[in-house]
Structure formats: structure tokens, C-alpha cells
Image 1 (cartoon, rainbow, N blue to C red):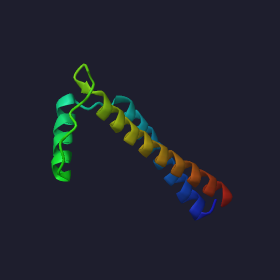
Image 2 (cartoon, one colour):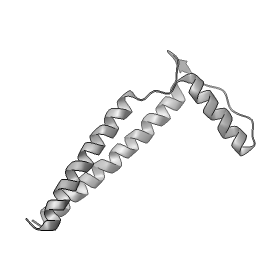
Image 3 (tube, rainbow, N blue to C red):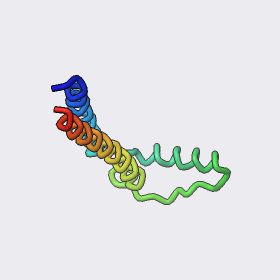
Length: 95
């Protein structure tokens, strides 16, 4: 295997672990209702508008903010998975 192939394989494994970690984090991330309200107020103040404080809370977790946080971690996990697959294919091309 060429040097590039070896490096691509190792990088692929590392991106795979990062992907798994991101998706694992996405499965557990939750945003407290109070934290979501503070962020909404801060964001509205920075933009010079009134904050939208409408929300749905379940067991103290803000559902909208929790879904947004999970979506961010899922997107990060998908990016890392894509990089892992790209590197796997590249390592095979140079094998």
C-alpha cells in the first residue's frame, strides 16, 4: 500500500470515530428550557427585535432547541461519515 493509501486509511478510521461520536452525542443532547429562553432573548437583543418566547417544553427540555441541537450534531456526524467514506474509496484507488 502506498503512503497515501495508508494515511487515507488511518484518516478514514479517525473520521469514522468522529462520526460515531457525533451521532452518539446527537442521541443524548437536550437543551434546558431556561437555557433556550436566555439564548432567544440574547439573539433577539443582538438583532434589535422582540424575542419570540413561544415554546414547548417536555420534562424541562425545550423541544425546538433540542431538535435544533440534535440536527446540528447529526449534520456533523454525516459530514464525518462522508469524509470517512471518501477516504476509504481514495485509499482503495491507491492500493
